[in-house]
Every structure is written in structure tokens, then in C-alpha cells.
Image (cartoon, rainbow, N blue to C red):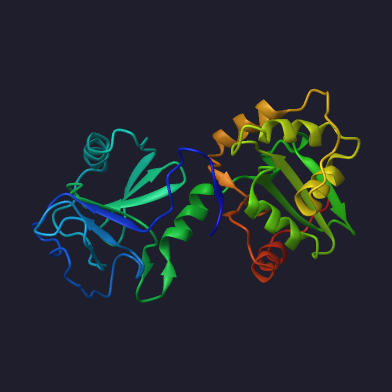
Length: 281
């Protein structure tokens, strides 16, 4: 799903980096498998006759099970710039390495890693997305909604909280979609992470007489309010987003605890809104 990523955040690409050749596909060779990684995953090999060539591979990792702590240590040695949150053994024989909200898959010896969708071939389930929803679940009642800009249409029975940056193109796209949804309560956490002037725009909008209307005026109609001078809770929102591991915008939170990233199309967004407990406020 398309999001505006903060500078320095991991790129959500389907990439596999291999550092060993034993038991792995020969670079350039096509491999067919009915289990393991998703069909869009790519392998980039760092060994063999043609380094850098891409092959399609969805074969599960082979070899004896390893302690997750050992896998975490090996992973950290090979990728010292990535902060590992957790390592778990999956039912598919792969190790799931959590880096923030991103999931990376590897084998017991960290001989290769893959970032991309892991698809269960039997059920066609996107295992990666399901796991990210579980990891990212947040109790809606615990969100500090006093730090958000509130906008209500109709009876407000459909509810969503969104982290957005005022310079995020995908956030503006989502806002156009929201304009057409009735009976909606939106809590907007203005999360200035993308550009130097994002913080200034966040302050001006928060300090406007009607912040909710000012936000829509800017995101939908391109109209900014006058310069503001108030105690806008920008630092508190930035700290909240870091704690919740919000690394891109828009990021949506629903009352049932689910988190979704990206500018959802209307039908998908309505499905999320209508399946969640309806409560105005």
C-alpha cells in the first residue's frame, strides 16, 4: 500500500539478499515452488557467476531449527544498521525478523533474507499482512485523542484515527476519499516528518480557529490558514508516532485495534469502517 515514508525509513520492497550459494538458486535460474514467499518476491544474490541477477524463488528455508536469539544475533551482525525488535520461528520454516513494523524473513543461518509478502499457497493468505496487523494492533481507547484534530460529519458513527503529514500526497488522496464518506468522525494526528516546512504547516493548522476545517481546507483545497501562534502539541504527536512505530503516512487506526497504512480506495476503506465498532465521540 502506498505511503509517504519518513526519511531514512526502510523501503517496502520485495527484495531478497543472499550471501551464500549452497542450497540456494543459481543466479539467473528460475525456480518453481508451491510454498514459502509470495509470488512477487525477488532474490538478489551476492555470490555466484552473475551477482545481482534476479531470480524468482518461493522455496522455504531448509536446515535444523535455530534458537531465535542466535538468529537475532547473526542478523544484527550482518545488518548492524537495522534495529531488530523480535525474531520468531514461523510455521513455514522461516524466521520472521521484526524491524519496527517491517517483517523480514531469513533462514537459520541468516544466509539470505527476504523483505516482501509471504503468501500461504494453500489458502492464498497474505501472511505478512496478517502478522503486521497483529503486531500493529493498538487499543483505540488508549490513543490520546486530545492530541488530534477532530472532524465530524453527520452522526459521526464511523470512526478512524489517522497519522498524516501536511506534505504527504497520499494523505491528500485519502482526504479526497474521506470527503465522500457520510457519518464519519476523523481524529487527525498531524505528524510532520516529511519536509522542513511540515512542522510549520502543522502549527498553523493546529492554531487555526477551526483546526479540523483548516486541515481539510489545506489537504483537499490547498488553502493554508494564516501563521499561527499557539502551543501546538507537535512534539507530543511525534513522540506518540515513534512509540507506535508509525514510519509513514497515512497510517490509520480503527476502533477494533487494527492498523492499516496507505491511501485506501473507497470500497476497502468503507469495509474497514463498517466492520469496526461504531461509536461517535
